[in-house]
Amino acid sequence: MNVVVYRSRRKPATYLYLAAGVSFDELPEPLIANFPEEESFLEFVLHETRVLAIADPKKVMAALDEQGFYLQLPPAESYEILGE
Image 1 (cartoon, rainbow, N blue to C red):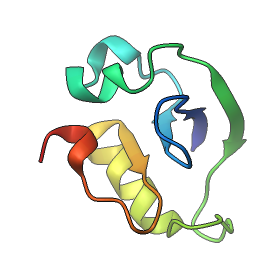
Image 2: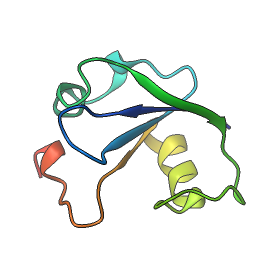
Image 3: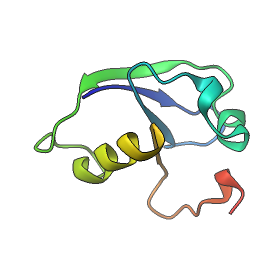
Image 4: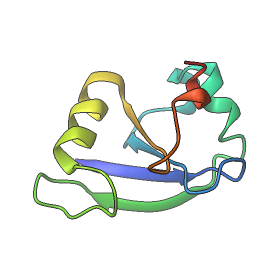
């Protein structure tokens, strides 16, 4: 699965993984607000055995399949970025 990762300039250590081909227009507005620059940080092929710094690749892949994105927050963060 091809993935594009965006880094938030507003929230340190916050990254948004998008499945290749998913547009920012398809994302929830509160999420888009934290990534206004749409600056891609990294592109790679994600597979089950890929080592990621914080996230479980299987969970990332499941989120990408289900909702088209995966939000990686710093370990101590809550989901306040999505308004929850």
